[in-house]
Amino acid sequence: MSKHGMVETEETAGERLARAAEAVQRLTRWHDDFPTPGVRFADLTPVFADAEGFEAVIECLGSCATDVDLVAGVDARGFLLGAGVAAVLGTGVVAVRKAGKLPPPVISREYTLEYGSAALEIPADGVDLAGRRVLLLDDVLATGGTLAAGAELFASAGAEVVAAAVVLELGFLGGRERQGDYPLTSIVRL
Image (cartoon, rainbow, N blue to C red):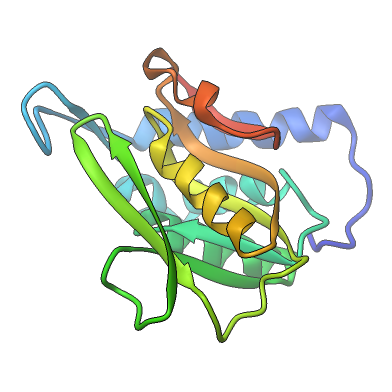
């Protein structure tokens, strides 16, 4: 698939989604009380370590928005997803970093997690983001703060998030409601 790929049928898209969802459901490891008591952590490492599972996830995420200039992956598992999808789409990739990991100047946004708060950053110079169309990726959508902060970063840099996608959505935490007007795709929604 490239960003200039052919239009596909709904059946083909459904088969791709089913293949990715099966891999995610089969391979995800769950950890109770991690990283803090009361949180159930979804470890997608086994999904990414499985060649067929990783390929299915990358193909599925790459189909969410094929007419983009950049793919952005949120720290840290989003880096893996972003790089894979950017390679498939033939675009560049931008790493959305945790605070303090990029040299200044940066654009920064604070957000809340289900177990605390944090901040994300992107470069304020060196990467021309103005007017660019961005596909924003993360591994898990929980309360929605991380993905929303990432979208705000790109908007403040003059870019447009045209779509966002995640591997796993924990729908009971309401994160989808915190997102912008862009389409949001999740491979598996619990």
